[in-house]
Image (cartoon, rainbow, N blue to C red):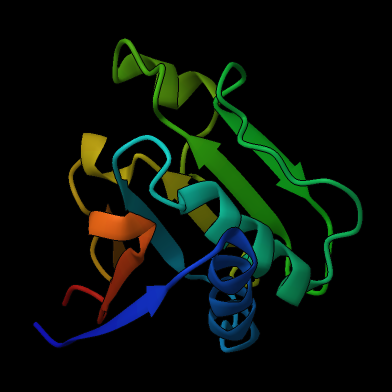
Length: 140
């Protein structure tokens, strides 16, 4: 599997990386954001949302599990941190859309089996607070 590593030194830099990544999306992507609390997943998601043209504040849907935004490409932002049971995913229609233009961002994406074709992004906090962000090519 091929991957590219980036490092960011602030929330603004992490959002900018998310904007650059989001600008490359075509629709139909599933993006799994994985890493510890405070590692930068939500900041990256805010950048992706901005690139897709989402207006207003983007926050993690920690308690609702999912938020949908209409934009240049529709965005569904999932947060699986509080996921108690996989059956909850069915209740929210997790990844069931047949809209090929939709982008799915999944925070805490390591809590599920990686869907075929998903892009994996791993966030780590390094000593000194730098974020190490590894973007993996889609799974076959």
